[in-house]
Length: 159
Image 1 (spheres, rainbow, N blue to C red):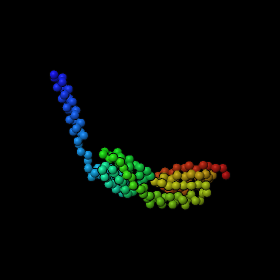
Image 2: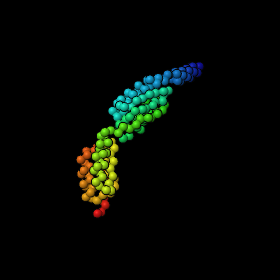
Image 3: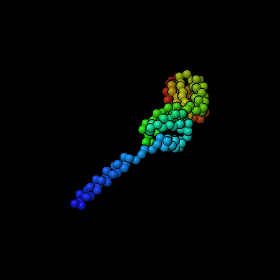
Image 4: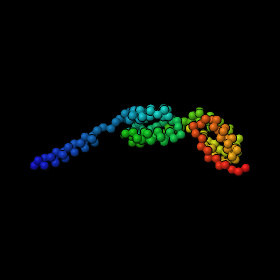
């Protein structure tokens, strides 16, 4: 008899816990929005991103800074509890620094037929083919731009 009472009590306790956990309310859209805003506020690159929430669907708008910031901000939001889905309307902001760096790079590269260059997020990528002397001169000029990094994918050709 005691065994049946224990089994019955355990069963009742399991049912009670299931019902209690199922009845807990989901946070409001406003609470989800506050949580997302708090998370994004920790990253300076996301300071121009705005957040709205409707029935657990988060809509992101505005702009972010950084080469992969658009998918990164979406991933960060998707990891938040109670976010059902994300509509990502964020645009990557091209900074004045990137534009200036790219303009300066294009002026330098234009002196070297066969070479191309691109600047993104303060990283310069060089492609094409040059002689060893041309590559050395180009590298010296590009290093004066003080980019974070220079990726040299230029093939060296014979004269």
